[in-house]
Length: 311
Image (cartoon, rainbow, N blue to C red):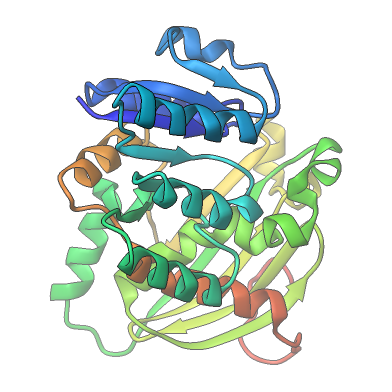
C-alpha cells in the first residue's frame, strides 16, 4: 500500500483521483485545498488529514517523515494549471513521485527545468494522458499504423463545452493562469492527435479569443482543422434543441470517431500504470505543451484551411 497526498482536493477532477487511489488499494494520508468544500473525501478517505494552507500541509508532510517515519510515495496534483510546476517541485522535494493533471505546465521551458530537477531526484514525474488509454483511441492508432493510404487523413475536430459567467471570474478565465482556451480544454486533444498521427509539421491559428479559438494543425499523417469554444452560442442547432450544453466531434475522413463512453476507469488505469513504473513522463507530454504554447503566441493568419465553424 502506497501513501498518497492530494493537492486540489476541492477541484472538479479531484474525485477521479480519489477514486483511483482507492481503487488501486492505496492510502491517502493528507489533502490540501484553499477551499474547504471537500465532503467528497468522506466517500473515499475520511481519515485523511486536510489543510487549507499550503505551509501547514507542507510542514505536516515533513513531520510525518521525520517524527513518525511515514514516507510519502506519491503526490497527486489537481490544482490550477499555473501552480502545477511549483507543486511538482514540492512533491520531489518531499521524496515523492508526482502525478499531475494536464497541462502539466504552461510553457516548454518549464519542462526543461523539471527534467533537470527530476534527474537530481530518485522520484519520477508522471502526467495523466487518459485518452492514450481509451480503447477507441488505441484502436485508431493501431489502424493508422497498419493502414496504407494515399495522402493524409482529413480531420475536423470540434469541441464546444459551454461555460457560465463564473468561468471568467475564476482562474480559468485568466490566460496567465490557465493558458487560455486551447490549453485549458484542448491540450488532451492535441496530445492524442500527435500520439496517433505523428510529429507536427505546421501550426496555424485563425481565431484566438477569450472564449474560443480555431486553427489548422498538420501532422505526418493528418491534416486537422480544429475549433474549441466555451460559448454556448456556437453549439449546433440540433444540440441546442436537445437541451445539451456540450458538443464533441472528431470527423476523420468522413467517419465520426466515437469515444464518448469508456472514460469512467481511465484515471484508475492511469494510476495502475504509474504504480508499475509505466506512466507518461515529461517527454511524452512535451509535444502537446509546445503546440498550445505556439497557439497562444502565434500571429493570427487569414489563409489556409479553416474549420467550417469560422468559414
